[in-house]
Image 1 (cartoon, helix red, strand yellow):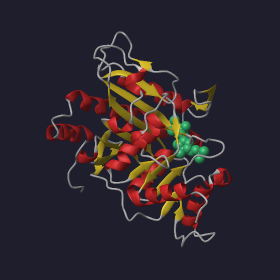
Image 2: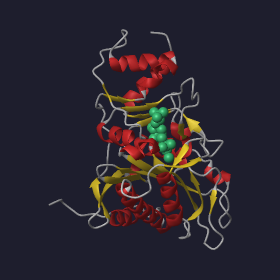
Image 3: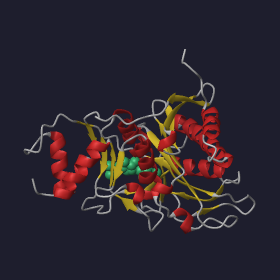
Image 4: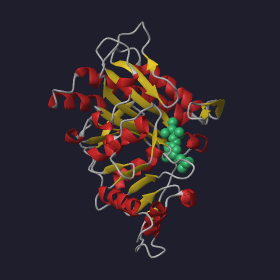
Length: 340
Ligand code: AHG
Ligand code: MN
Ligand code: MN
């Protein structure tokens, strides 16, 4: 029998009681997100049985083919979050512009930015996928519709960040900052509750010797990036090796493994994506907040992800995420470039 049964709702209430500055409004936001996650999880787990697989035939603002489940997840989150009066606007990977709160609903003081379904290329082959979310407080006067200024904030201002991984089990992991820790909840579908399963997650350091990167792009990387991966492989005189390579191709899954085991996840810049592929506002910044709150580091190769002030809703960045010692090593190799 597990020790104490703590639901995510109970955990949020306890956190609110222990940290009075976390206003009730904010906690209610997290409940609603947990509800959206349960609905998406149910559909993801049945995706093979209903006509929700495959592509819509459209391409999104990213120029990527839209999967039906991307659209479904996007709609579930917007419908779960737009009417409770917490938000002044939303930003989604699947929507080019800011998503306003409909006139018939109250306007709140928070901004929700999210990747409704991460790892879309893995949907049809039953490989785990996820949802990523980031919460900011608005910076423009209360009462009006949220603006770009409320959305284009640096990651260090985030109030909360989290992700859901729809894997062999569905887990929700979130943080409201390092002083309050990173906590993981596993969905018990038989009772429809997220139960606290991973209290106060800390990223292992010394880390597991695991690096995660799409090695098919090796030829497109900088010399420093190639030498870094040679170091992990123990080739070309760059080091002893001894590392394992793990790459799922769903950022949430690759990050979740890195958070629990240690290691480093990398999506470097390359000649095809010189600014990197992953998006600042709803992929890199929320995962960076979680990683740092768990004692790790998150860099774009030379500066902290959380210091990036995005100029556009869908700005991209290179991403190096994981155990501090390995992210430091990556920055050193990238700084040294081709010198030994
Ligand atoms: P999304 O499905 O939200 O567009 O994200 C896909 C991202 C991320 O999940 C993953 O790390 C990366 O794409 C994989 O890219 P490559 O296929 O180029 O390795
Ligand atoms: Mn994504
Ligand atoms: Mn996505």
